[in-house]
Image: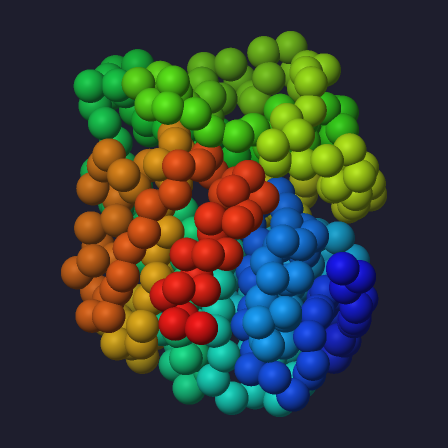
Length: 328
């Protein structure tokens, strides 16, 4: 299916977005995370537009053909949420269904907490409500797998490396973007369940890769094709990793923003989809999802045998799970 390429620009930001379906149909938004693009949702755009939705997937700020900024604070959640509300009101407003993955999930959660009037239902893949709060992340670490003296931040070591040495992290990710994408976008497996996440070694290795540059490993075609790899590589090479990495650099600002939201508990219907083999956002074997369970009154949960990139690795299962939950 061919998707329409669109751009909405106002006096503060430009958002590029892909769309499929008729504009007057019910809107369903797909919000990507790090380090992805609107094409991360290619399987969902086609599927849900054929079900009668107007399906929309933006390039988030710092990515693809949307605006790129040069300060960490420009990538705070409040700015990003405003981008999405501006786009949504431009497209007619009203209640919509919001689907988020990875860093796209905090965006969706914040939209629900700050702008309830624009939310009908919420779907989150991998990242539960409040996960990006330091206390929730650190308290969920499996200390049998990640002893505190060796891995003080467990699988979250990479996030703290950004805060300690952002320029080095950026430099390594940009050194060979083509290979970086191949290293990051890997499918999951049950054999990984008792093993460390590679993200746990980022501080130990002084960066993502031991030699300071991503190795040339085979593409995992269960997640990306050569065509999609080329698109990811093109845009991340052109824009760099400053923007994507900066999403991790506003934890205090983001926490203040979340805690001043009008809603702390959500009453709208929520679907959370666990990735069984996600070794970083491990919601199946830790307490990471517990704050979400305590603060979402209409929560349903599902689990897919997938790694972190489930919308691309297991698109049919993801689409079927959401469709059935929406009772279409």
